[in-house]
Image (spheres, helix red, strand yellow):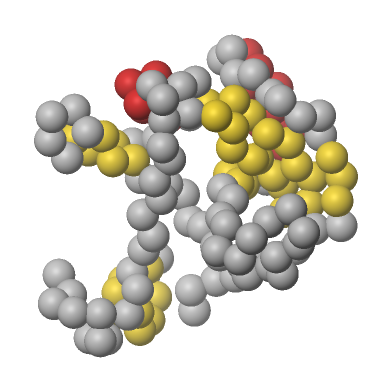
Length: 139
């Protein structure tokens, strides 16, 4: 455990040793029906979880990235969006549809990736995209 945010610690990631003051990210999705959203993450997406107490599940996520984009007219500074990433969006969409996942947007081919949005029961929408840009590494 890191005692304070000013401490630099060694973190082992895929057998590569690197310095990290921040060792992860905790994403919160506010849901009108948290039980439905948790069931979706666990049963449909298959994210492993731990019970943090009283049925409050915390899910492990695949590796991620963060980007800072200029705020446009329809977004204010500090707004956040969440996109899950995949290597083959057409295959992923087909597999998720077979599990009953509802998609709210058609596939859209953008310069930075191919994207869509999916419905999370009880919790709104989350983006899904296949990046075309290089992925950062922890080396």
